[in-house]
Amino acid sequence: MAFNRQKSASLSSLVNCDEEIKMQNDVVLTCAVTGAGDTTGKSAHVPVTPKDIATAAIDAAKAGASIAHIHARDPETGLGSRDPKLFKEIVDRVRDSNTDIVINITAGMGGDWISDASDPALPGPGTDMIGPEERLAHIKECLPEICSLDCGTLNFSDTDMVYISTPPTLRKMAEMARDWGVKPELEVFELGHIRFAKAMLSEGLINDPPMFQLCLGIPWGAEQTVETMVAMKSQLPAGASWASFGIGRGQMPMMAAAVALGGNVRVGLEDNIYLERGVLATNAQLVSRAREIIERMGARVVTPQEARNKLKLRGADA
Image (cartoon, rainbow, N blue to C red; front, side):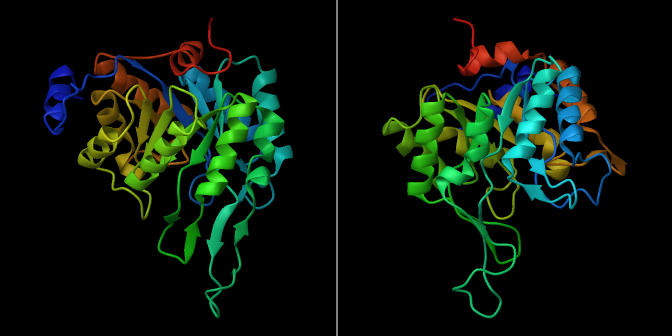
């Protein structure tokens, strides 16, 4: 792949700002191993059981991932689950394996509103709306180094589903995560989400340095283009750590663009199930492919302990 430091310089010309954009040389690589989407029927490689999800995280670490981003699934149905017992089993299996990997657990479930077909004012089948304490019950149980925090509301897909995270809910979740020593990964799907995340930072609910994830390509959030990534990056507060990801065929191009623009990256079966056209991937294969691209760009993937130090997570070297 022809990405290099000259490519980074050309990307920087897209930005109309005073800060020079420098390529990321030491890259934190996250693998999102399963997600909660309807992918289990599309690929047998998507892990479902706690044992399989833990194994996927361990395999990703062996392939070079710095962080494992973890969802749980109902072992019977394969659907996403927020059962704390399932998360606890996954995390215990990873920790008991003595595999060094930073654990990042989703806190994004419990905000799904699907209008009833006969009365839009009422919740329909599939609605899952709970309060902030219950949304973080599994985080309190597992105490990972990182938990994701989806920083706003979003029209999700072409259905009547709306993902809802209101300011009071987010403020309470941020406060709890801060008090437990868990770093929130601020997942932002559009510019308004960044604006609110900065408000929480100014209110002392997020400890410095903040950690952002620019989520691209999700219908109907920000589009997965370099121009969009640049626009979102330009709105981040000074000193913020950031990463970005794309979905489907955009996963690797957006990964390379994030490195060129000075960010960290995420790959994995949550966002894309193919290694190449017609070839289903494993998580480890996606990590290996991303690592190869990063190294061909002249950068390197950091170890889990280096990621803790860089992101100022619990367990960082003094």
